View 1 (cartoon, one colour):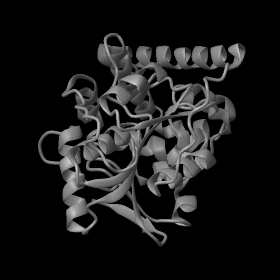
View 2 (cartoon, rainbow, N blue to C red):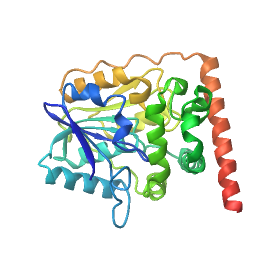
View 3 (spheres, rainbow, N blue to C red):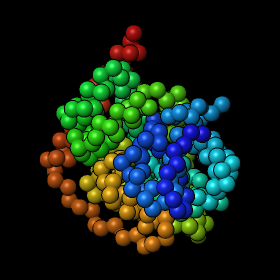
View 4 (cartoon, helix red, strand yellow):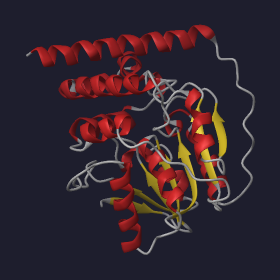
Length: 301
């Protein structure tokens, strides 16, 4: 399993989301490495790590991460995950003895009913569009308007994001051999099991962006019900990736949580400005409609 390791102190494992790589953490990696010995891996089938033989699912990825940690004498390492990687962190925490303190940022896997096909088909259509746009991706990620069109589903402030962060992410999204199978298994495969109260003794925090359009905020209480030992932390003015939209706050939350310090209780939901939020949702809808049209055109051929 390919990984990058920097820093000193207690080890800290970073697990990226579907389609990503260790570079998904570039906005917070150096800040974390000032305090911890940070390992950011490329999960099997993503980045520079070859895919698993056989099934690709949360279960098999968790087995692979466990084997990696055992081989490097890192069982019990503190861990942070994002999106699919956040669900993976919860699964590892549920198993016991694999990770220590854990932070799960906007974990997938807690959708129900109509949320399941919306998640699956929107992401599947989006990645097909991203693959088709690869020749234009440097120009698209380098322009604030096209960044807004491309990333409104993922970020509360896509125009502010750096092309140096987004372009590598779009490259790995387009080329990851395990993306399609894992996406289907995330949506329609085995449901995430929970952990009874008192079964996870190490600190566990579930962080969620209030403006997440991938894993909707309404799913956060479901995650907490399955993991009652977890504290739920809300990021205001934040989409699906807190490390993109609120990097400083993300670093602060991670360092406090994994060191066992008290994490500030979430404030009451802030009343977001209606017009900017409506604009972002509308832009995301236009993009998803375009992605769907591109997908249908591909199937028609």
